[in-house]
Amino acid sequence: MPTTLRRIAFACLFLAGLASPLTMSFGIRHYASMPPSEIARVTSPDRRFDAVVLKRQPPLKLMRVATEVYVVARGKTVGSKDSPIMIATRAQGVQGAWHGDRLLEIHYSSARVDGFTAMWPPRTKTTPQVEIRLIPPTGGFSFAPDDAS
Image (cartoon, rainbow, N blue to C red; front, side):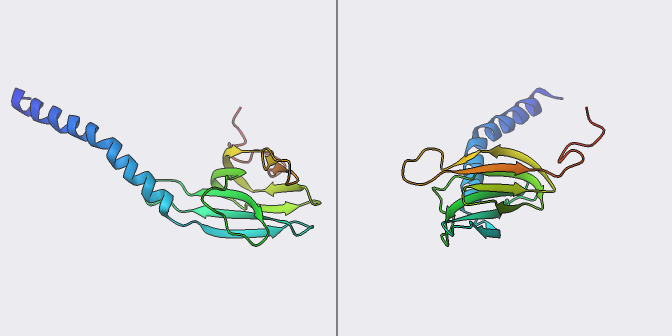
């Protein structure tokens, strides 16, 4: 390759590298501004809290759909300041099930769980805490192939 073409190719790659933080920043802001769709809502037996399952469709088809589970006050929508108690990709069959007022089980048929917390809210003196348990399917792996070791 002639030296001039190498310099042009290097300059193009260099400029692309400089522009990548700007394009990523735009992509993240655009993704965050897309409203998620509510898949399921289950109210606790004492009718104080709702377990809400949301799906967040990414702007690009190459990105994975995120499934998020939240606990909110009954009837409230999930706000931008609320933190998910579970985040998963490639999730199927995600649903909440309350067992008593303070135990929430999250059932799923398959999922790649990227984040999870076992208590909600994390620290509080005024709101009673809710314990959260993940309940994967029995009889095998929930994400990895059965023959994986």
